Length: 166
Image 1: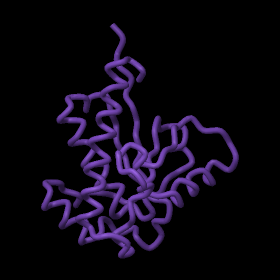
Image 2: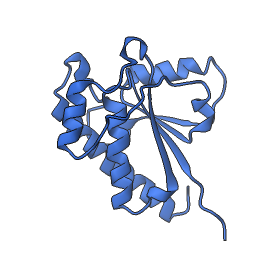
Image 3: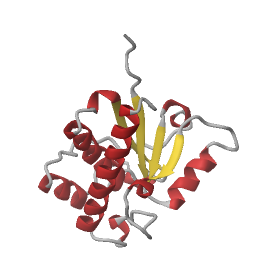
Image 4: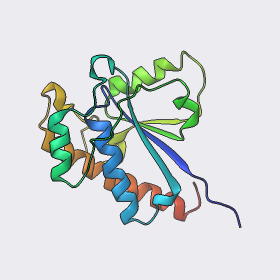
């Protein structure tokens, strides 16, 4: 009997202090509810962590707690060139982050499938999750978008696994 392939997913936002760490936790819960957690390894990173190397943004930490998540042990990290080949899927919150990751490849081919997260959200007309850190959206509205995207992404992966596509 073959051991099922572990799928390695990376969620990426600008600072790795708000959206991507929360999405990692939301999606982990989604996978657990679908009973397919054992097939996944999740991680999060940022493209511009610079001054934010201090941990989760306080307001995001509080919001996460309200929804049953503990982000207090999250370690902020930058996307690395190695991620482009070590991960199976890289999901970005924004188009700018998508292109930052493409630039990181420096024209080289990479094996990870790079996608905008909201391609799986069912949200017609919305391509990006705005960053509440920059006041573009409320923290709660960002959470709701991530929750919806998580459900659709979970459905996608569950279907692919059941069809033995992954």
